[in-house]
Length: 98
Image 1 (spheres, rainbow, N blue to C red):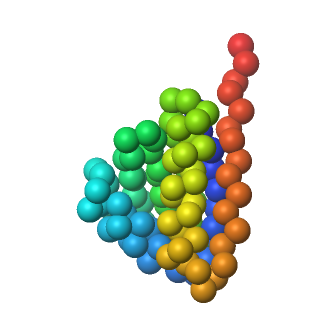
Image 2 (image 1 turned 30 degrees about the vertical axis):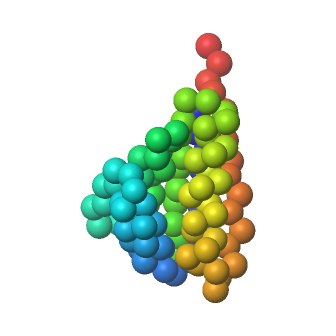
Image 3 (image 1 turned 60 degrees about the vertical axis):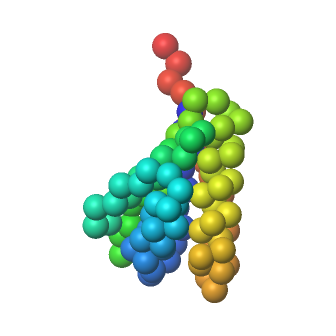
């Protein structure tokens, strides 16, 4: 299962770095320039920074784990970007039907 969101900001690369550094003390994290990946025990988050936005995709095996992953990543971003008052709204990817 997947869900995506985009946070419009001029500080996308800074927030990507902050999230990766924060979670890197607790869980496996990969970061390469403008891309990152955070591997939580219950799901993953892929991040991509560009000039005007931070794109995030969360993945998990179950709906409960997907919701938990989205909440954990979103709540941390809200704390780190409090000056910009981000409104994080996740959009679930609909599965393809055969």
